[in-house]
Image (cartoon, rainbow, N blue to C red; front, side, top):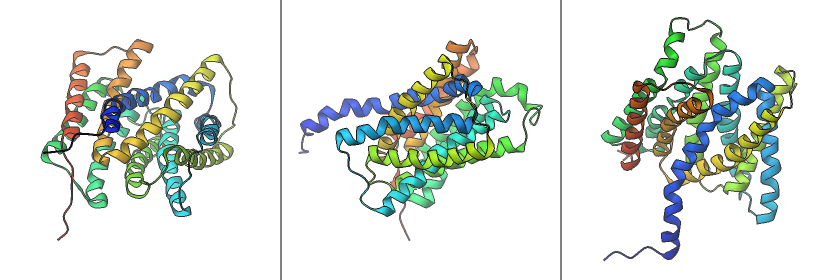
Length: 311
């Protein structure tokens, strides 16, 4: 006879069930925030200000809650590397690619390949073995993203390098590699990371890197409008604080490939938000793609990744 769950576990369960959906909702607003904010500041400058404001929010919380710091310098170094990958290279690469003229839809689709790349790398690096159903779910997610964004990409397909160069593609591909590697690195080396103080270290490392990029490559001019201030406030509180803490918690609790599958829901949800905010239409093919993506995520989430046996 199995033991019944403790009262703490029962109380925690509803919150745990809402975490993935809340994360996807928050994360999906990132491209919307970029669209609102980039006209007023260059990408590295924009992100540097965002991360410094995030630290201004997190540091008082560390003192107020008396949060513990990572137990060793080695763990601190691993946490900093994760911050460079997940924050500096991923976000900096996407923002810089859009600044160079890469269509936002194409950027979203390329970064949307992350779950497949993460799952493929998780096999040799973390020893996670995916079931056939999980691989099917990952492939269905990719098909769904292609359907959602296909209409937006079609006009650009015939003029791939019109308006942007190879640098934009290299930049967004670097973002894809960074978010995939960062997810795996976090799972492999940072499982003992305190979420709050670990996030402080990550944003500090990313802020230093992006500040250097702004200093070397940009004019650092900012047009302070109400739109820009409101966008910054949302990106700091909604994305850099709430969504990232949720992401770190999800990576700690679940297999890396399962967490990565959540990113398949981001482009469809972003498309819905763009339809609501910017009047971008969604046809039946796009709606079908959203349904396929959702089904793919369900397949990955319900499957059980097993450790790879050694011979």
